[in-house]
Image (cartoon, rainbow, N blue to C red; front, side, top):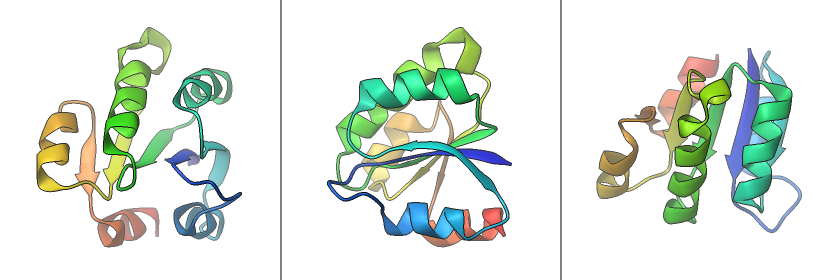
Length: 109
């Protein structure tokens, strides 16, 4: 499966990105800084699934996912949200599946 990872960080990588690279899945792309750039990149790489870690910046993660979800060419791509608080998860459950980190790792194994 081709994954696109969105995980807000000032570093060049994150534990989530590192973990996904170690699975049998392909990393089609990632974005760690800019939601608009994540929006553009998902259109270009056409991933099979998008993983959004929005524990650090839940509003930014939700807004980015919302734009990707609304765009016709990416609206059917499954979105997995991890790291959100319960009230944040309620705001995104119409766009995708909210998982714990452990549940995501089981899904990817």
